[in-house]
Length: 217
Image (cartoon, rainbow, N blue to C red; front, side):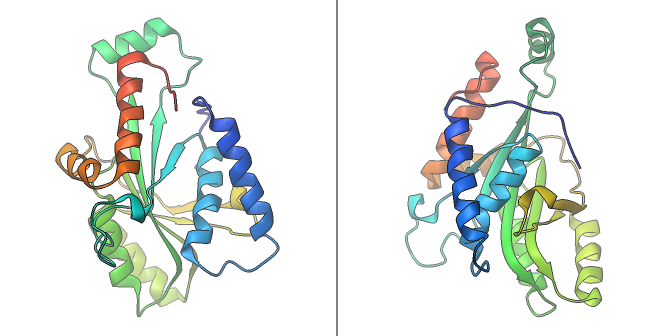
């Protein structure tokens, strides 16, 4: 799925450069952890016009190990009206209560197998269902049986799946589209904002866009 959204917020070029440098370093070695996949996913999300934010566990209030495993996703993103749209159109959409932004949430896993699929999937459901689009992201799905099970679960719960091509993130693709949720679950978002400083910063950026039509860091 490609989109022509090209929004950039202040400082996004610097962030993209940092992600590119990280990818160049990682391309020289095998991806060995989910954390190494985060900048690769953000590179892909930038390619398709999304503005993303990594939610760092250490910035959450719950410091106990694994306390946030079922609370917030690894990465969140926003999809906003393109800057090139006429300001009159933006004003009309905003005044009429139309969609100004869609929110996306992503749970990242290196490998999905039959022995891990249900835990991985329902962690994604728990962490990402609040968004307009919730996605499970993986580099590898082991076996046809695993993929069949994954497709069944996605059909039942509306979660999508992205295959992240770690050797070249731009070649990544959405293999199962997420079901669109008409309205984000703001109660869940409020909880996440209270628990994680990165989520608070992300929602402040969303709020600024709703108010001004501008994206700033």
